[in-house]
Length: 459
Ligand SMILES: [Zn+2]
Image (cartoon, rainbow, N blue to C red; front, side):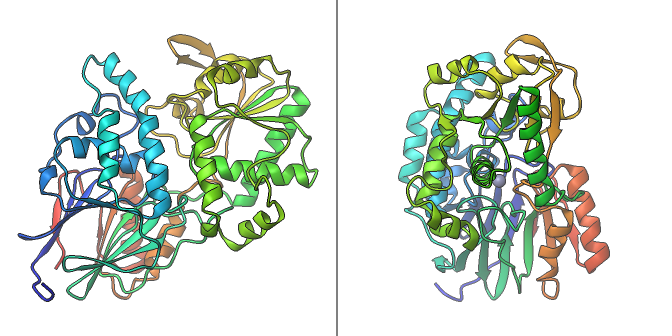
């Protein structure tokens, strides 16, 4: 019933004091319970947040709003359903579609982990399929819908295809959950939409304490890495995130080849997941920014993510056969943090080769192989074997899908006149606390980095 308002509380049940495991519960006293995201904690093995019971009764949750299809935002949804959730799941159409293949893909890794730790996997394929039956068809950006007394609108966060900022209006107050905020301008996506008139902000802070190099610098570094690899007759390994970064890198390499800026070298897209996600990107080109859409118009047939030198290796035997192709070559394979996936095989083969290069393109969680190599490890363990690292390790940050520190502050600035409190989440503590201080110092706004399990009334 309209006008029947009570107090509203936000609870921080994941992604508080950490980048991954997003899980926030917004609840009316004696009323509706809305969960924002239900992600997996990544990097740490056997994390009790992943394997243990939820800190609330899943059967009492009415709605789950999913900001985007990254596994640290969706990876525990099938477990939520297994543990009793019977509400509705809401997101944009691409988020729904990408999430389904991400969740199916995660079964293999979760199964392996469970076997290693001698326990049951946290969910199985039936749970994923059941979760999809609770997932509504998809709500586009800017179409307001109602959840009880909440008026809800999705805005474009510019992070990955279909990613949202959720605005909720309750009793005249605007509550905003940012999900992850894109590093605009992006190669493919539209810019993050500005948020105004917010009263409460729950915002990400992955890069709360540092800025990225510009996109142009990263593009030049990518170009250099390709040229150097060809010159040295080596292998360029790009551990790529299946969503967004893979498509951006394909788009860039395609352009560089068309403009004759790099030699026509063989490129392997060696990730069944990234191949499937790329096909979804092709379906939703209306979500792209103007310049990417214009490019698309020039490539009506095979699109902007395909070119003659590109080989999509879907089958395992095709992946294994990559080593039979002579150098130089470029291999794009998951996972982006080298904590699983086909990239491990290539790293085992080519890290000991000083002619080769590993190009790190995004955030590397603490505890992942990618992080170790980024920090300069000379010896690493891959699939039980010790591997010498003689290849060059190059990190580029301009393709990051996340706003840097200044971009995050800018985002708050647009709504600085009205905002009463900023909850800084989804960052390592050092990063979140830095942003908290920056918001207080620059904008004189109340900000804090809540700890896991903390809650706060919004009134
Ligand atoms: Zn994300």
